[in-house]
Image 1: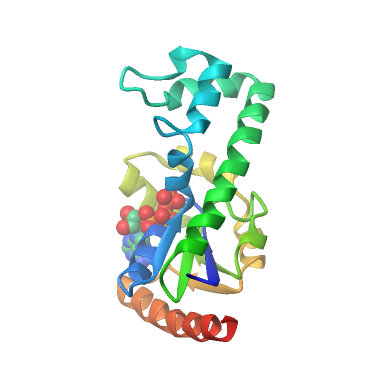
Image 2: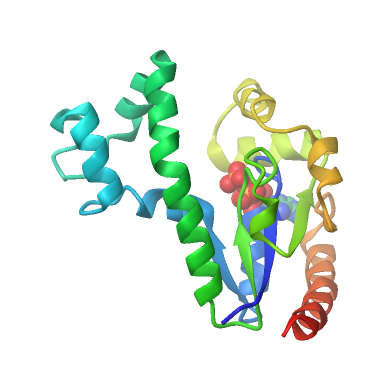
Length: 202
Ligand code: ATP
């Protein structure tokens, strides 16, 4: 059981997944808030059945999955429904984040939460790791990965906290403006730090 939980956060395209994959290669378990957000509304879940009760059966696709674009459209136009949905999902996601990170079998574990600072979830973790890149890298890498344009990436960045605000919440920072060799070295260094911190936590 992991007693020591490192929260990993960063803006869109900053390199969170790239970084957590490097820790995973060292046997460190990674709990991903984006995966949990899908699990809590998966077919057969209590979350999905409550959404169907509220929005009707048409909110589910022929495959029995939540029709996310449709739901997004509805809540975009109705702030009360958006608040209802957040009140349903946020506690479910939070509970799973705590449960899954506590159940992790590695000496410490990572909890990857893109909106850790935005949603004020620092209390769920023992240490905050911010993956930081400058705006230019962030836009270029996201465009390359998602086949999108700079305006769309900027719009998503606008909805996230500023780089400065995120960095202010960091216990450790990975500067991901460099190449993969530099990233690997930094992860090695942090891994040693986290092993020592986790040891002192037992
Ligand atoms: P999101 O929150 O948008 O899902 P993320 O923070 O998980 O993104 P990644 O998907 O890890 O970010 O990285 C974004 C893109 O940048 C990926 O295509 C990844 O391969 C690439 N990338 C990450 N780090 C580097 C690097 N140091 N050099 C070059 N490319 C990189």
